[in-house]
Length: 467
Image 1: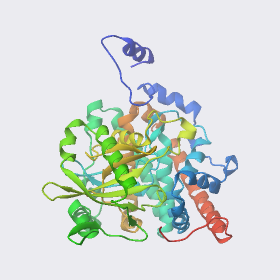
Image 2: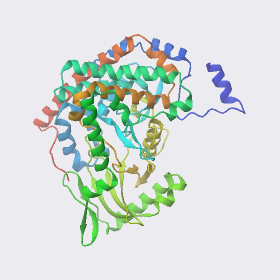
Image 3: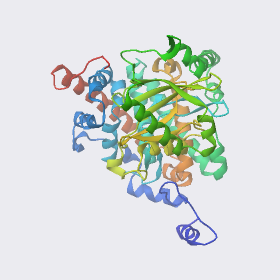
Image 4: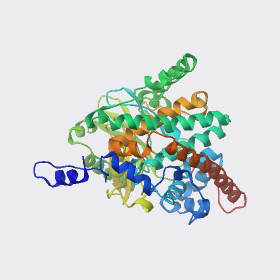
């Protein structure tokens, strides 16, 4: 369909095209034209001299929206390894990606598509699916930025886990190759078929040898039970004076005073604004649960310092459900591609997640309390998040599956024909992506060393402690 046809369809009274995000023409010609604006091999160029602000300066610029008590913990975790640094430095990489010309082929970016931000979780039908899993930085933007972060993360993780260079090369190449292959397939696929496509839990196992497949299957089965609502309750719930309570941990959880008038008011705001954000048919289900206990959480590396709350909810039948409320601030990419169209950043996260995932948590919703935005979701709910050590033995296969999942997410929101045409059939695009990933992995090690030096000199305060 040509641009003229698109314009005609958009203005015709009998044909209305609705776009969730800005998009280019579906024509392959648009993708080939983008090569002039952003040559594919040029994607491999990286020059730290183009930075307008140091990496440390970028990190410190984020401090204002975080809990000041937890900033020393954030820096301590980031300083623990180059891999931990990469996870916490999405803002740094966003600025560096934006310093170069890009394709202009827009998708809903994950924004933080590192290799361990992919994993398994349960659909509403309780089927385990493989997909992207973190959307705090999601925003419409150039498709290749997500792929660059994915491939960079492969090299950094491999170095941290002591994986040999040849395996790291194979894994990064597999991520790019699977992305390209999947996008070419989506370019020939109908719109509904793209949206119905899912990657079930058994698909990643099919690429493994029998030895690794058996180990991975056992791990999946064990973690899916452990990370269910029932499994989480066994781990986190204690009984005090006949009342269920969430256990405390000085580095992870502290209680919120449920008898405090301000805290009660906050929760009432949470409940009211959350109900307004979910489909009306869910209000019946949600209305059958009452809050039993609330703790403030510390989670992840990049999210340390963000306000996160865990609510223990009890149903009329006594069934327990954990709801997590996580602060959402402006995406680190908004400075470079424009502000989100959503006034509430929790809504930005929810919409981005639904656009990218084949199936999302039915309880996903957004909240605003005292001018702070949050998104709400079930806690864990069979989410299986691999560790670097767990995937070390089959890193190329896992990275390839991440590339495939990322292409699926991008095809849902972008124009697969244009993206596939830009990538092309040769090696120019892949070479550019991998050249950048190698160079930026080296830069990550340099930036990590700079953070460690700043901590040792006293310029940055770091401490492995909670509140």
